[in-house]
Image (cartoon, rainbow over all chains, first blue to last red):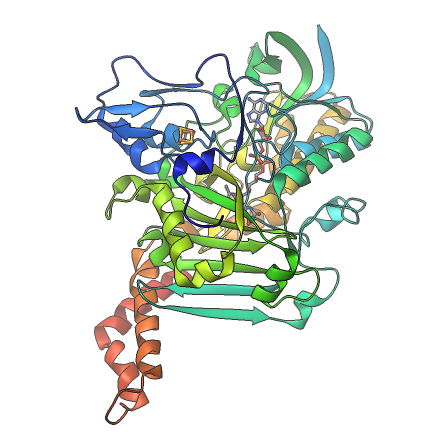
Length: 94
Length: 428
Ligand SMILES: Cc1cc2nc3c(=O)[nH]c(=O)nc-3n(C[C@H](O)[C@H](O)[C@H](O)COP(=O)(O)OP(=O)(O)OC[C@H]3O[C@@H](n4cnc5c(N)ncnc54)[C@H](O)[C@@H]3O)c2cc1C
Ligand code: SF4
C-alpha cells in the first residue's frame, strides 16, 4: 500500500541481517545528556524515544545506518560504528 | 601478508569508478565493501546526470541499468493549503544522448561492480574496514575483520561519514550544519499507470521537487522520481534545522505528511511501498570539503564532501564518479613517479580543480548561505500560492482587478526583503 504505514511496518519491509552486537551505543553515563534528545527528532527510523522519566531510550532494530544520530548527538555521546561486514540493512532498491 | 597496488574502501560510485579506472590500467586493485553487495547500503534520490561523466567512462553507459530518462522537470511550491506546480518539458530533454536518468542504487552499483570486476578489480563484499594502518606517518594499508591488508595507496570512498578519513586524521566527525538527511520510500506501481499519471511516453521519466511547507520551513524539500516500475518519494532536510526544532517535528512525520498531501496522494494511489531507506548527505559546499589527500591516502566522493544541494536538487553521484576517476589518475601519476607521499598525491587536487567538480564547487560556494533562508521555504510559497488563489477566484460580486491583487501581496517592504534575498541568489 502507499497509504501511511506505521514506522514499524515500514521498517518491516526492509531486509536486515543480524549482527552479533549493536553497532550504536549510548556511552555510559550519557543517558541523560541533553544532546541525546536531538536524536528523537532526527532519526528517520524513529529508534530514539523519550520515556516517562524524560530519559532517551534507544533500540538498534531497524537502524538504516544513515548516520544522522552520529552527526546530531556527536561522538562524545554515542559509540557509533557501522555493523560488521555483511550485517545490518541490505537495500534491494536504494 | 597480502599486498595490493591499491586498496579502495567502499564499493559505492566513487570507489567503483576508481577501481574500474585503475583495473583498466592493469593495477592490482582490491575493493572492500561492507554490504552484502555493492549498493546494499547506498541511497540516492535519485537522478544521475550523464553529461559531466560520459567521456570519463566511454564504454560504460550503453548497457547501464538506468531507469527512465528525465524528460519532464517539475517543481511544486507547496503552501499549507495550496500549491503551484511548474512543469518544464523541452525537446532537448527528449533527444539522445539524454541528459539525465533516474536510478536505483542497489541495481546500479551492483552492475558497476561487475564492470569493475570484468576489468580485473578484486571485490570483496561483506567486509568492513575497521581502520587504516599508519606507519611512520604514511598510510600503508587497512585492517578489516582481523586481516591486515597492505597497499601502496588507499582510496577512502566510504561515503558521507567517512570513518576511514576521520581515523586517518583527514577530517573531523562533521558539523550537523553541513549535512542533510534524506529518507525515502520506493513505491511500486504498474509502468502504464506511471506513464498515465505523469504524462510520459514510453521510457520518459519525470522529476518533481517539492519545496515549502513539506519541510515546515526547514532547509530542504521533497522529491519524486519516476523509475521503470516504481516511484522514489522522499524528503531531504537539513540536520541542524531538524535539531533546532522550531517548529518541532520528527523526521519520519515529514514524509508521511507529504504522502497525504492531495497533490501527492493522487500520484501514489494504489502503489505498494516496498522499501524505506535513509542516508546523510554532505552539503556544506566548498568550505566543508575535507582534506583530499595525505601520505598514502586519497579521499573521493561523499567521503570528501563532494555533494551539493542547490535549492531543491541534490547532486553527488556525478561528483562521486568523477572524483573516483581523478583519484585513480592521481594514483597512476604517483606510480609513474614511484612515490605516494602527500606531496605527490596532491596532483589529485589539481586534477579536480581542472575539472567540473571543483569548478562547480567554486561557482556554487555561496549556495549554502544564500539558500539557508527560511523565507524560501515559508514566505514565498505562501505568497505565490495565495496570489494564485485570488487571481483564480471568482466570488459573488465583481472580481477584483488583477493589478491591485498582485500589489496587495507585493508591498514595498516585501519587495525590499525579496530584493535582499535574491541579491544573494544572484551570486549563484
Ligand atoms: C535521499 C538522497 C537523495 C539524493 N539525491 C541525489 C540525486 O538525485 N542526484 C545525485 O547526484 N545525488 C543525490 N544524492 C547524493 C548521492 O547519493 C551521493 O552523493 C552518492 O551516493 C555518493 O557516492 P559515494 O560513492 O561517494 O558514497 P556511497 O554511495 O555512500 O558509497 C560508500 C560505500 O562505502 C561503503 N563503506 C562505508 N564504510 C565502509 C567501511 N568501513 N568498510 C567497507 N565499506 C564501507 C558503503 O557500504 C558504500 O557502499 C542523494 C542522496 C540521498 C541520501
Ligand atoms: S544511524 Fe540513522 S537510523 Fe540508525 S539510529 Fe542513527 S539516525 Fe536512526
